Length: 410
Image (cartoon, rainbow, N blue to C red):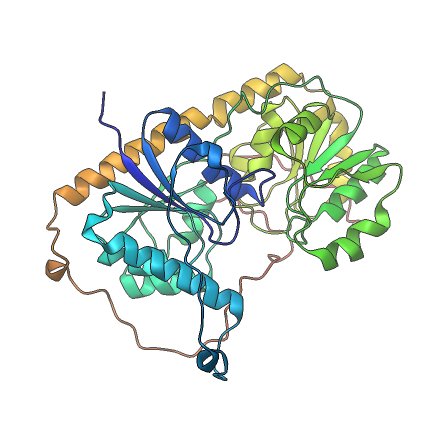
């Protein structure tokens, strides 16, 4: 049996890892931390204040920035959130750069650029999981470092392919779900949509599809975009479309397990589609837009795929999804979306990364300098929230039959 590892997990400095989770990334890191601890490894966690103390892991300090009055009066001062993130991750990376930090591996899940940009200065090997499509800040960090200092994993083949132009060597480790925490449920009469309530997740299209199918719908999740909720969701709530709010894990699993089918309506290139795996684990078949990594985990045994943004096709495929046996949907999830397989794959990557580092000189002075590029002006700071119409991208995916409905507006 291999010796226990000392693992530093980097999540978001803003959001605590506790129920109800702010999003899929927080849920993923929480489950990973718990699984590593259950397997006997020592975990230290960098995450937002208020994270779950029951995880029984050490906390890496999220340092608060206290600026002087003179600094606050500087007209070049960046927004407070930017400065807070910058200070938190800069402090963390300086702490990890200390040879006395004592970790065997650093596993970075954050979306911030500093862990990647500063990875070459660490003596401790780092693994970075790519949870999103490419973003300008992370691309900049990879360009400056030449993608050195950290090994990369991605949550789907789609996501790995999207980053290939700046990170050509990416290991795919699909997200996994704990089937004990998403148990097979009895089903029910209503449809369910769950996730962050925001425009890029597009629950308004789930509402439209449910109305066309003449079936009740329950929405569940945190309201991440209040303006969107007020504009696109609140006016549609009635006896047939209800919002259950931001539920804790057990409440959410119970709701999903007692639903007839789950609607999944991303308006962007979904990197993986954790809600798909969670629904299928409960035996609840999915009807999903074939965006991003979703086609990698949905087959005819687990649900139906339809063309992106095609509300009518989604409504038309709901009866086919309802005809699936829930036990078969659950077994499909167990075969494709195992948390045990995910954790084993990460542990294998940890040990490979550690072994690779041990075979190389540790003195940073012996490492080649990162590639330098001439600075260029750019106004591209934010990833667009919606891809071009028809965001299906099945390159490198198994052949998938995608249902198209008539050309009708959503």
